[in-house]
Structure formats: structure tokens, C-alpha cells
Length: 83
Image (cartoon, rainbow, N blue to C red; front, side, top):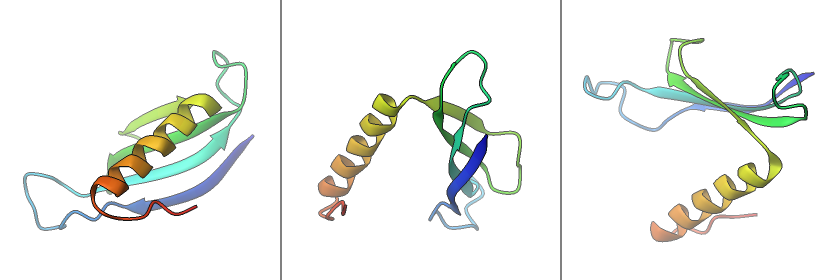
């Protein structure tokens, strides 16, 4: 089972030659034999280079930890993290 949840490009300027734009995608998957369970799948790769990025298979506890880290980073920027 695979299910896409959301994906988008990052917000870095596209004309920066030192840091090419990146894309991210979040989904669900149960096709990791070594994981033996459903996982939240986070993929980060250079925009336009599908299949050459990094794929993280996150257990629910690790996905929640990432969610907390993103909320903390938003608060550091003076932004409300939202629901």
C-alpha cells in the first residue's frame, strides 16, 4: 500500500546556483520489508531529479518527533505552528 499525502517545492529562490530548489513529499507505505509495519515516508530531493533523493521511513513516534521539531522551529521564527 502506498498513499501520497502532500508534496511541494521548497521556498528557496530558483535562481540560486549554489542551492538548487528542493522538493519534499510525505506519504504512507507498507512496502518496506525490513520495517514490518506502516511508515510515514518523507522524501527530499533536488527539484526535477525524482528518484535521486533521500527517503526516510518514519515510525509514528519518529514522525511525531519531526512534527515537534518543525513546530519548535516555527515558534523560533515567531510563527504559530498551527494544529
